[in-house]
Amino acid sequence: MVAGSQYNLDSHARYEESEFGASPAASYDQTMNIEVPEKPQTMSASIQASVTFYPYHDSEIDMIVVSDDAIYFYAHTASIRHISEKALEHFLSYAIPNVKETIALLPLSSGVLNVILHAIYGTSCAENAPTCEELVEAVDELAIMGVALNSLILPDTPLYTVLISYALRRPLDIYALAAHHDLFDLAKYASFYLRALPLSNVGDEAAARIGTQYLKRIFLLQMTRSAALKELVMSVPTDFHPPTKTCKRLDWQQRTLARAWAAGAADLAWDMAPDSSVARLWSVYGRLGGQIECPDCQAAFRQHLQGMVFRWSEVKNTI
Ligand SMILES: [Zn+2]
Image (cartoon, rainbow, N blue to C red; front, side, top):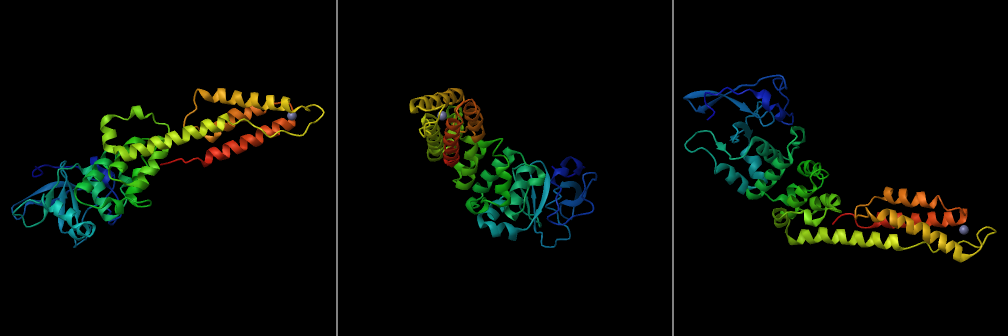
């Protein structure tokens, strides 16, 4: 499949990285053709290789992994074994038989394989800008290979860091991935962006992948936040100031404060969501408080608002 074909590295320059040694030949403008025998001792073909997983004067390289889009990755069996003996067996199960060198033809795209190898080597694939789909497939594949994900995908590990970069744009995909593999820290991070997701928007497939335990966690998060916000909005100010010349009756104060607070609740009603921001509360209630004529009542209103905003910021934000 590779023999006889001339591949140009330009189209795959996104694999360029330097963790495994910067090569003067590796640049976005250059073409790299590596002479590798298709059948050792018989013929050679010009092939396309990952610039990251490339044998820069590395005599320890003892395996070539080829993706289904014919990109060559040069690897160390010891590094794969170090992560998981089963993973190495998995790679070797795709090795071409009766060939001197170990050449494993994996049925994975180069994008996915690149993420997998970076995960195994503990390096970051961020510079290769993998898609969310490639990351998800790579993690699923690592699990199939028998790699213990809970030690590979932890806060501050390179793979975790790349995964959370998609949490804002693709929270459900990242949450589903984390839930499926019981990666609590990752699920917790993604759940922040699911605080207001209508659960009716979660399709059957995603729901099945997430599973009841993690679905329940999101549901409880949303319920808790909705109930807390409702309670805060319903709690009218009750701290009244001592009578002054212009504002002497407590029932006046009570009415003024309750009316302004109720106006805030009415303003919020149409978009009161479990992910309502502190800034939104400040904006709505702050404006109404500013319309109260008595400065002492206004101060009481603001103090109540401060307490409300503080309590809202303290409400659990993630699963
Ligand atoms: Zn007053």
